[in-house]
Length: 316
Length: 275
Image 1 (cartoon, rainbow over the protein chains, first blue to last red):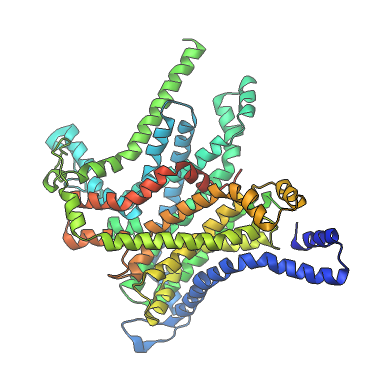
Image 2: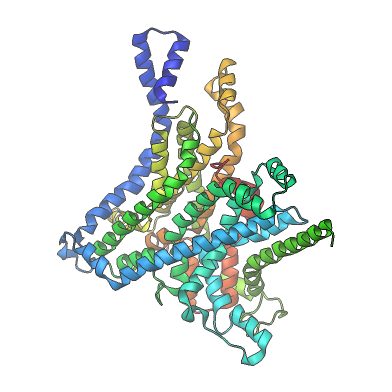
């Protein structure tokens, strides 16, 4: 119901004359907007104004090492970014990392959610164990993977290999040999519990009587899964995929800590960080930022279309 | 084998699988804690010595490096920004759900869309502006940014929780002549409490974990725990037990909060949005 019609309903109830009612309706609309304004203004000031500034800077020649050389650059910065090998690689890495981590964590998270949805002894303990990776500070998790697990000399992985196969066991240098996979693996470990939690909440909101009825009618477990469970979970899958993607596109911690962006693992956030923080090339960094935002908006618009069902569902 | 016997066996198998996977997922953390209680020489052996003697060497080295200022900074930034988020998000969520403003879904979409903007794209102007007004290396700058980072999620979560209040209940309260304050206290508050708790928990976790802003915008005074952790390794070479001890201590507040409020976390993550 829109503000107008409900305001009209209020005036009908109170039975005031029409002249007064329009001003009342106006006051009502403002009373409704008022609680929203602080949050809205705050968000616009803190997130939108800087972005406008980013757009402006992206059209400028501006390197902090040459402060006197500030000038209008037109589209040069964008050209630089789009022709820069590193930037292109960063785009590819970002896509691979995001798609890979989100998909693998979703599938794993779904499987684990199905396992933990069954009633068994100690289920809540198993769930507690499962969510632990999500509760470790990302930097700490990255340090843990880099030094305690992946390390070629004394990391746990090679330690286990040596323990199992003796001194002649292979001792791969996990991070140098497969840098991107190493980063992905640690992120999958951190994000699978997140996906699992949302999907488990979805599973537990399933109307069990309908599932029981289907089972009595002779539906197999697989049929129940594909025809009932998955459609019910659709919203939850979309939601967790969307939220996961938002955070993993922007991932900085794992890339920064595990490989320092080396060995072809620099993603866009790391590329921008480096261009701006180490190279002090503000113009190029801003252009890259603008390109990221445009790309994200395009993807987000598609993604949100599917999630928009969440918005349409309820109208008061 | 009978049908029931088959079912029982597959049940045992599935339970076993659930346990094995859960243990595998927690294992790196267990290993981190285990390693943190070894001496440096025992921690860095290959193959690992599992039963080496207990040592708090890593912890004394970590606490000897004066980690309290960054931990206190993290605590300040996370707690205060979470309070700010709730103060801003509650009224906004109210305006978007109960008696919503016109185009409420557009407004909600705007809030959400700010999450799609990679923070790096706004970081540079924030940095330059803060530098200009001498606001760098100030914990309040992080508090403001963390508030903006978490506000959209909180608005979204709280709105969904508020939307769960049936219209009839609000109308009944109105018919009974309950004023706004009484309606808020007696009808809305009980429904929204779990929502507030889970929103607060998630805001706290994300603020505590944040690295990029903190790394770029703080220096020695306002350094947060994650930044301290990253500097910890590079500046002192590698001491595995010490790194594990540090990682564990810095993760402890989030671990404790997360374990204590697991159900809230589940509720919050599903955001009540999908019912």
